[in-house]
Image 1: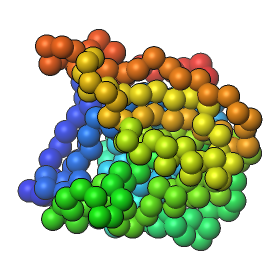
Image 2: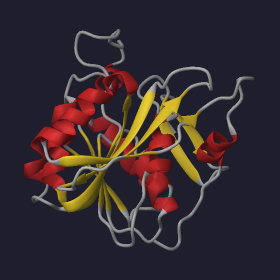
Image 3: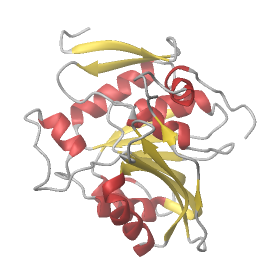
Length: 249
């Protein structure tokens, strides 16, 4: 293994993950989003901006009866690393990773090719936030290569009618996300706010949308990451450390 890589594990070793030591490394956003996703038997899934593949690895373990899963990643080194992680976990028969630009998804896929889109998109618009000197992290976190509008437009193109999207996004930009979804006929149907502590406001929002659906939004109880003492809450412990396999979908 290269000195530039670390070998980490999730769920007591159920998932192994190679990560760049100084480049992009997943944060709690990824398992939080994966815990919010619902999949049915045989559904095809695409992860836009898959990074090192962590979200698809979790989903493949949680939903073994799902259909093909595809990760799209614009950064070639990250795409190669995601492919290595897929093979490392023995999931090559279920997951494949493509090096490509989601803004050009029409070159990669036909319209309405997927039942489900998931994405942990770049959070920061240009001109906001400090740009990380490590390009790999900067591209993952800032809208250098794709805006939230680009992500939602790709989702619209790729989703079948009635298909679902799942996003995690900063709470302060929630209105932007919801507006982009509605502009492209993806109706927000389920939402959950994520709070760092019980007494603090939300920092992230989880949103499920359905292409072509009618108005009607379910707001779930909030997810609180840490308790007042600074430890993980009981629910967050399950999100991070307990892999709940959904056999019946």
